[in-house]
Image 1 (spheres, rainbow, N blue to C red):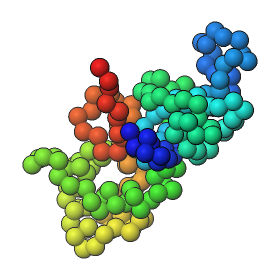
Image 2 (image 1 turned 135 degrees about the horizontal axis):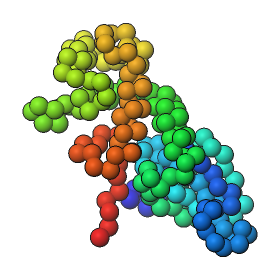
Image 3 (image 1 turned 90 degrees about the vertical axis):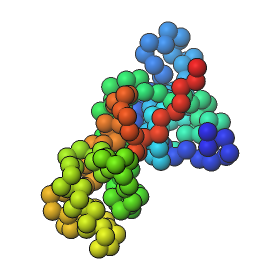
Image 4 (image 1 turned 90 degrees about the horizontal axis):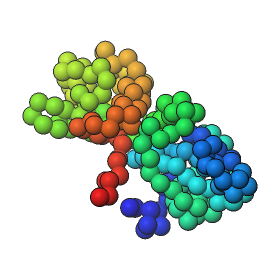
Amino acid sequence: MSEQNGEQVPAVVLDYLPHGRAEDDRPQYQKPALAYALGVEEFRLFEVTLQEDVSLTITDRFDASPGNELVADRREIEYEDLSGAAQSELEHAIRDVVETDEQRFVDFYNDAQPITLRLHQLNLLPGIGKKLRNNILEERKRGPFESFEDLGSRVSGLHNPKEVLVERILEELREEDLKYRTFVRVEEQQQ
């Protein structure tokens, strides 16, 4: 894992449980505060046990590396393990990450490559078939896309390039058995 090298794991809070999980039978004063969080670089989902006296708010960004001043423990979880509130906040958080780091996601459209002879990374995006994919590829030959607005204006039929990405990232987080993942890094399950 990269954070063992001292690297930060930037994350955004999806839900904050100041008194831990409801199903935890310990007395309230013994239950640590928890946060459900989305890693902003690899879109990994985390349940983070917070250090004592740490309080976070939904949408806060923080370093989710274990052992820092905020985090007592962290484990990677699946979409189904998120609280209801975290699940409902997820789409907003993804949209915020995509908007905040727009160039990174515009560059996906600039740099996407074929996966197989018949399948291109662009075809993984909802609503993008052969014709729209070819329009994007033709237009990017004329020069890299500078922004989502530039993309939308240069490629007819691509009405909301940002929302298409948000939808795909959500799909990658929700669906366990997708063959191809472009944005979400899934931790290898240990046997």
